[in-house]
Amino acid sequence: MRAALKSLSHLDYALVAHLKVEPEQEEFVDPLDLVFTELRNSACTGFEHAFSIEVCDKTVGFFVLRERAALPEWALPNAMTLHTLCVDRSYQGNGYGKAAIALAARWISKNRPSIGSLMLGVNVRNVAARAVYLKSGFRDTGATHYGLSGFQNILKHEIRRGG
View 1 (tube, rainbow, N blue to C red):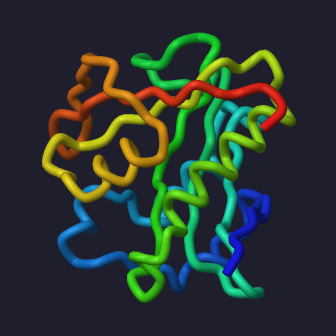
View 2 (tube, helix red, strand yellow; view 1 turned 135 degrees about the vertical axis):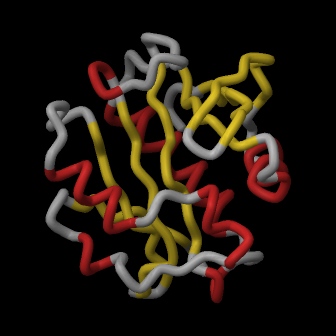
């Protein structure tokens, strides 16, 4: 089954409200109602891009890309950052997280040609997510950041032009 991205607005929470992760993953993924509240109240309108991950007309996941003024302090200025990547627990293990990363990189390459990399912070205790990110082309930068749920490793994925 092939995954695709669907661009969402800050008003589209109902389209992803059904997504649930495994209980042990909950501390690492911001609640989606909170994410959409932050998107609605953001001072960085236009620099935060929400997407659903679609497979056969079913929404199986979600993430947000941030750029420019919406970048966290740990990000490089010519990067976009990936946040709140989640795949519904009933669809995990099918490669949709990895597919979402590839689709995000392709979207950046096509729509933001000046962006050189995709970055993210992954909690040091989130071993499963870290493994997916590393298998998907991310590399550990060696930098860390202290986030709301503890220390995060900062990972970076180079964006290839034209793909």
